[in-house]
Amino acid sequence: MKPLYDKIGVDYAKLRQPDLRIAAMIHRALGKAQSVLNVGAGTGSYEPTDRAVTALEPSAEMIGQRPPEFAKAHQGVAENLPFADDAFDAAMAVLTVHHWSSLKTGLLEMCRVAKRRVVILTFDPASPYFWLADYIPEIITLDQPIMPKLDIFAEILGEITVEFVPVPHDCTDGFLGAYWRRPHAYLDPDVRSAISTFAKLDGVSGPLQRLEDDLASGVWEQRYGNIMEAESLDVGYRLVVADLST
Image 1 (cartoon, rainbow, N blue to C red):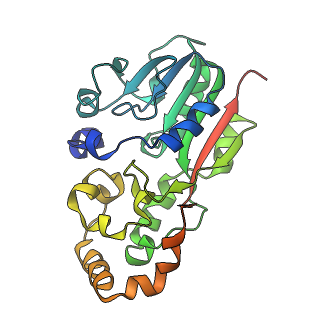
Image 2 (cartoon, helix red, strand yellow):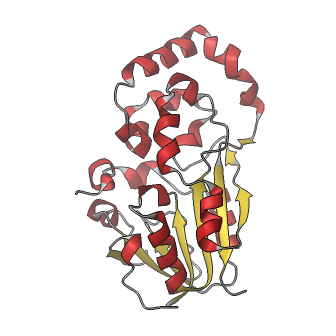
């Protein structure tokens, strides 16, 4: 089957610029690792530039958008990493595990090839959803089956640490929760085209029209305007880290 991002990733590199504040958290979590495998690497977002990086990505469309100065990407999937045991100091995966066919197999593969650490940026489906779900409740029913609960990571990886990732109000990475303080952005089809959730939803024109009407009438501001003073918000993103060296 054609990878999802071969279909929706045409302008992905332009719309999904890594946010430096989130990148700093990921890079700190990698610790002293000097060689890093990025699994589900996409266009290279959040890859550290001060370490040796190897990328693995299933979508040819995404690989083609990687900047020429970035590490060459191997085409492949998390569930069958084409690398030797302990080939890297660390393995990272950013907002990708919910696309894998087998979470357990992919995580065990990351542990197999990483000597020291596994770092995963993911979304916690047990966290409260932000206001967009009031307009499109199907987001919740779509996420619940595919977003792994945090205790599943612990069952597979053993002892983990979990850090919540605050999303800045001006986040430069256009993932689903990035525009929590910029509601008009969700009305832009280009913005939605780089968010995999919208590619899986049908019939959102009605809810989006209601959002547009509420923004124009002031109803949205009456309901949610209190968040407009916040610099960042916890909208469910989590950094999961497993230390393999202990």
